[in-house]
Length: 228
Ligand code: CA
Image (cartoon, rainbow, N blue to C red; front, side):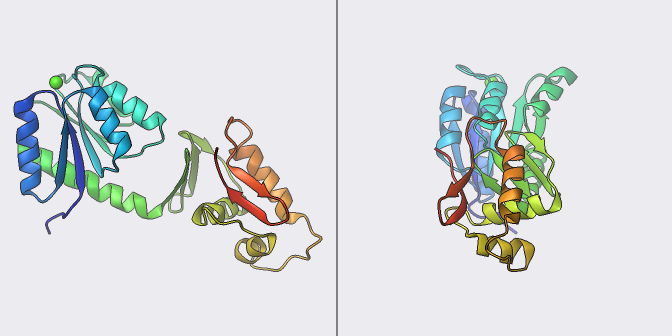
């Protein structure tokens, strides 16, 4: 099957390689943009939603590792495949630590490059199905992991369900009644404070250590996620 319309950013300063990758990827049906230096590449990666970024490490203005680091610091989880002329284990480890998803050493066969691209896009699609995002918060319904700014957060079953419900309903204020029905599957007496207790526990884990608080109380209405 031809992967239609998936959008790829190629950040590569060597025009010859950039053109080769662009042409080859377009022949496979991908939409491709090219940036020739790190600053331009980071700007493009932050302004457009790409399905994949092909990132050369040796780039003018800002090197590929720095671009990847800043991208992840902004909470962008776009899959990144590094291209590099270097092939030392050190570079590879640093690259993967920075949040790159794959690594290819130049020179490489275009067929191998394409296979890596297809594999990363497939993985990203599987992941995307199970992952909820809000600001720098990530909740994976499949692995049942929660992270904020890359740091794992340990939640109880109920706290997890509560956060999942809030993340699935971004932009909506959820009343205590909504929450008790969906998360506890029962109606609480309106005088009970079970939900408030759980919200407070969740806040301690999700918000207490960060300057931006994500769980909001809307007076007289309920709870919602927000950031200023
Ligand atoms: Ca280069």
